[in-house]
Image (cartoon, rainbow, N blue to C red; front, side, top):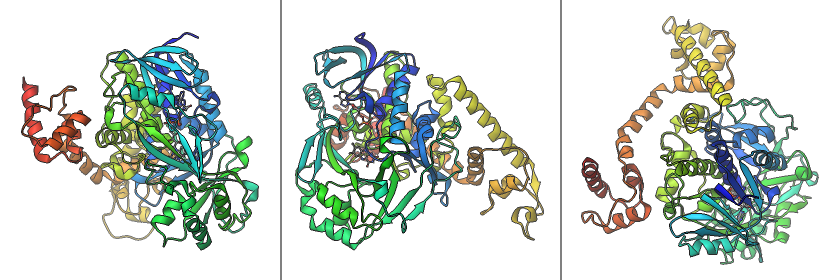
Length: 619
Ligand SMILES: Cc1cc2nc3c(=O)[nH]c(=O)nc-3n(C[C@H](O)[C@H](O)[C@H](O)COP(=O)(O)OP(=O)(O)OC[C@H]3O[C@@H](n4cnc5c(N)ncnc54)[C@H](O)[C@@H]3O)c2cc1C
């Protein structure tokens, strides 16, 4: 094997896979290092992609030319539209995938790409010449050279599994931890801290009594995640079920609380705030007895097809307690646990030490992505991986990095949040983190990002042509709605007062009037997919709100456009507070807008900085 590459990616998880795919698509040679090749693209937790905000990220990755949505569509076994009764900003798809097929799909994508080489094994060292990273060294002493490195090691650095009083050094169940790589990073002056996460017990599907469980069937009518509109896969479509914990569940957990690894004092890292363990939930909210438990299939094919994931029951309790409390839950009285839940603690790098485009502030050719840099989730990892892949290539080509903004994409919100605010617990994307949610909808990610993906070189001719066709259909439908008039009785299905006739675009702004009904009544000719209907309907119905959000973006965009030079000297500025100076120096925001979002930096100090930057830019 050649031992010299343009870029080396340490990690074959969701971040590493998207990074490698993007690099290869942009024409560079990349080495992907993974502890186990047969775990490339593995989903160690629930094999589910999407939901509000996370699904938006998957769509944005797709719009830019990434692969997560395609892999999801090819392997989904249960897809549902979420939040359909709520506004368009929070509606999204969520898919349960076949875990084994999802993994295999990613492995094949990397295997078949001639620009990608996979090296199975454990990287122990990053090599450096003091200014930049020069390559990696494996545990058998083999060395590989590259001009840039992407670090995407997930939960593997210093990984330690906890279950009751069991302690197992591991990157996750069944895979060795990366211990020496942590030391190598520390030797390079990169500081590490600890975070933790956890997973649930899995039970065998034949040990469940389904009689009294609430059925959650898959939704047959959905457009799929990818804007490529792939044909539906032919995998079996499986239902999910819902049950709830009961007083006995709480009693068992509370009686064994001191046996939970989480409360042993051994774990110092914070866990994901929005995905707490069941013992955490009972400890923090002892009066809330009943918690929902979602029974979700892990796979429809192969060895994992018997396993059911118990969403909501993440735990660090010992195996015998897991057996007891799971069996206290209605429908699970005879449940056979086939895999026990566990917590895992791992090293991560403070994302404030990373530029908003993914590069380390210490080594310009080292890029950081995924759980390693404080995120949690496949979608967050994949999004950062893609951006790091693109920006590592651009760095080597001496091109400006791609920086997405908060009004452009959830990916922009995430990179800005991570690099400017840092994290205190694993960062999960939520719609509430975006200030302009209506501008960042699930349905319009391609309109926001596909032209950029084309410019970068990630969007191929097929995707571009589909994008242009969709744009044409959107214009066609919008024009038809503006040019077709109808009377109230035709729209409202009753005798109605009001203007004798309006155009359909105006009718659409009336509460309760739906575009799919107008199409069903034959008021407009032509076939329009659900995706196009969603986009046109949202843009007409919510024109007022959209305009308001756009003006708000414009109003504050001045600060976002005031760039701060990379090596800007804060030390000499006497007229700002110590706290502001220290934070600005450490975090090194890229724009005045970012500087203003750093907690503890005062508005008066931002005003001073604004004047100084104006002077500097005028020099
Ligand atoms: C127990 C557990 C519970 C989780 N719970 C949740 C949850 O509740 N919600 C949620 O959204 N997400 C959860 N996740 C997180 C989810 O799995 C990750 O967010 C996602 O997989 C991160 O992707 P990644 O690419 O950063 O890393 P990973 O998918 O972890 O991939 C890391 C890759 O790096 C490779 N690697 C690491 N070190 C080395 C080395 N030294 N040499 C060579 N290769 C190396 C590994 O082989 C692997 O290929 C959980 C993960 C685990 C393990």
